Image (cartoon, rainbow, N blue to C red):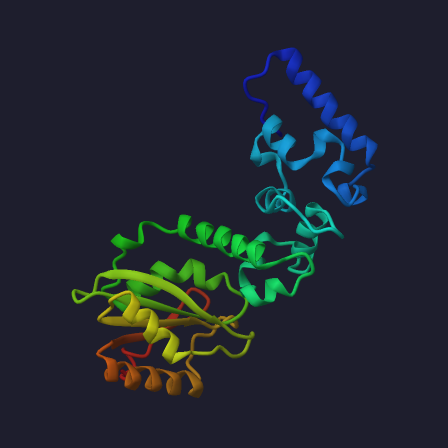
Length: 258
């Protein structure tokens, strides 16, 4: 139920009646709303709803619309937000799988909005984890456990690099690339450039298997060897390559491949 804060009893009744009447004006669902914010009854506009009832009263599309603020000349921001979600099965979390280039493929999403969406989702990921600087990555099990919830949530293969200092302390973690459901890419050159930028001495490579089975493929072994050999040339030690499945993992270091 919407939260009505700092209102007198009469104000609460008035606010609720206004909200219900506005919904009645546009039918049983908000699918019938006009294309642009100006066409929407004031009580149903995302910003006004957030002020009256709190942001928790907004649905996923309204929250996304509130952050992105404006649509295009052809489409209002709410229809655009709903279209983004519809193409992802209606799940707000699913849009994190889009690369910046894929977001730019949506009519109405330009460079600024694409970066805004990526930044918003990255904030959500970081807020869902404890302080990275205090992360205990001293063993394959602890490292896999720390990133398990995030990595298991992806529906396609994602390659992550975790950069460490000379005392094996956490410096930075980055999602480097996103592949298809069956194949990911390990861009060795890009990973090493990021490692050098972070002043890392070593790194841990990690990727997920959306199938849930962490058993490494031949391509995983070959990518590990390429990464290890390239790292040696620039003084970056590959500590491990972890493959995460459905709350399970395999360490190629423990398998003797590193």
